[in-house]
Image (cartoon, rainbow, N blue to C red):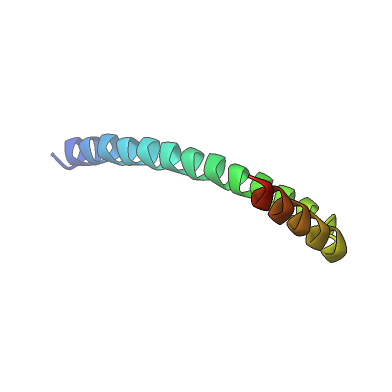
Length: 67
């Protein structure tokens, strides 16, 4: 009786472990996407030059006035 209980609980435990592993894999995948996006954003911010940005804004506003 006790052995059958332990076997049935073990099967339930294995099912939960399988679900947990799938969820962890999904979380890890999303964290990899997040890491990639953060690194790309850091690259963009490192290349950011305020003077260049101001010139780009002036150019954009000049084009908008022409339209």
